[in-house]
Image (cartoon, rainbow, N blue to C red):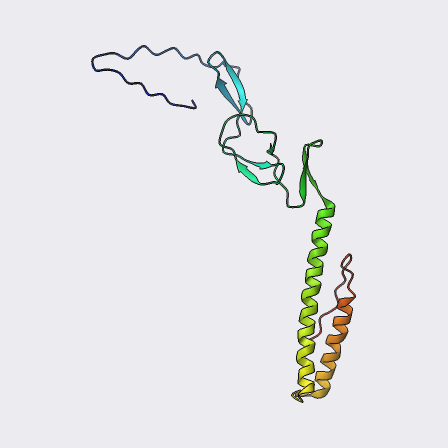
Length: 172
């Protein structure tokens, strides 16, 4: 049953006789995601995804189903695989948008490269300050470390973001 009914009777009266409820045919067995429903004249099978999570085809956003019936055209029960996937209506499945993924991968690599270059610059600045201010404990060691960091920064600057091979970070 999907609803309840409330009846009010006057004092001293009897409730009317209840109608006989027909039962669904014994051979009517609902499959997965189906329910037996009554339309006032006959029983029929309807879709039933209540309590399940389905996904918006436009965004992959999860939606909890609360009502009985078929899913609307903008929903699918196929799980959303991830942010670079799009719904293909012809294939009726999620497909990977490789160009979006590649662009995101390159952006991530460029961000890493920028971060590593900033770190290298900080190390070079500190070592150069030690030399300029005559604060290096061992001038030869500081000069060697400064050179190593400058070589690292040059190699890092040449890293191809389409196919990155990261240089080894010098000792601090």
